[in-house]
Length: 222
Image (cartoon, rainbow, N blue to C red; front, side):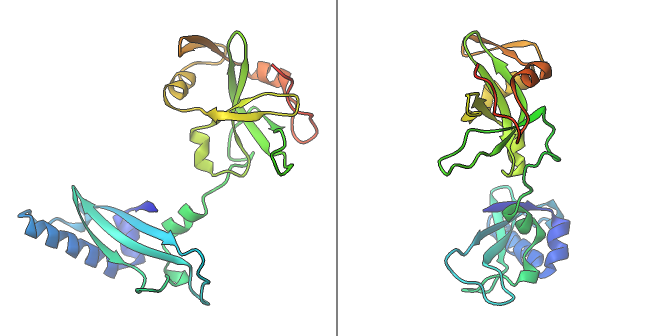
């Protein structure tokens, strides 16, 4: 995986790795006939992966990682862990820790209109959907939202759910031009997508159709 990091953070975590990555980058630039550049001018990231299937030794993670300095098309790098070994727990950069264990969606960190139970999945578990909006056409109504427990960044590109008697069912993602037009439309306003006129639902319209989780029986059908 690729995880961005600032020069300042990388330097605080492992100054030797920063110097080695920057030195390698400048060696490549020298061979290409380009002048050396300062480390601060580079774009930095970690390239890392978890070593699945290999038990971790005491005091060690299961992560292998490389620090990369990039400027234009050229880059330099420094491997943070020893060959055939994983990073010690106290050397795993905080950016990698955060990327591997991203914040999760909760009712407290995602603004929403109402929380409802979804239709049970194949395992019989009914997840909680935080409904953030919705829209309808002449013949159907769709809800927009994110489920509790998924990575928080998913809230930026929510999904579309079809209401059923058993609860909302995932239909697909809200992205591309549909996301742009939906986001630019105020509650109660209309927008066009794929030659269909859609109307964005108001909070009152959504609340009138849904019951809060966990006591509710789910949304009424459209």
